[in-house]
Length: 139
Ligand SMILES: [Zn+2]
Image 1 (cartoon, rainbow, N blue to C red):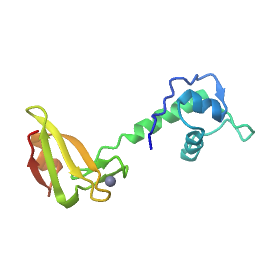
Image 2: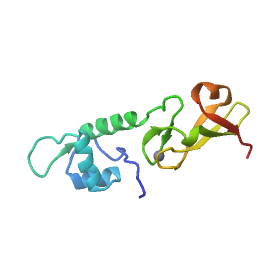
Image 3: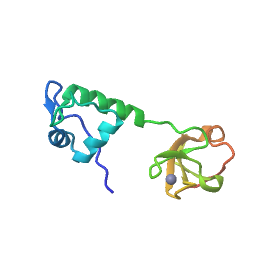
């Protein structure tokens, strides 16, 4: 399922929007706006059609964006499919050097077996991937 990133760029802070307008301005489906309501986006009041104030929408999306940035705990990768930090399957991790100091860690999600990545400095490996077998892979 392709996911479009919502953008509040087209939203004017001094305007109010009905759901369909807001969806168009943000480049998302109307159902996405309804989902935002479940996540806490508040309409101006209960009258129909529901109206959303531009400034409220911008603040909401800004907060959403900030909360999406979740650093993965040590020993974990952020799995894009699970949308959760996950451990590497069997504790096996490849390290693909990109520069002299850093590279990409690569493993399989232990839950869904999607390939998961994490950027890391080589010297940090023992610290951020404890209990894992790390194989250096030159590609
Ligand atoms: Zn996963």
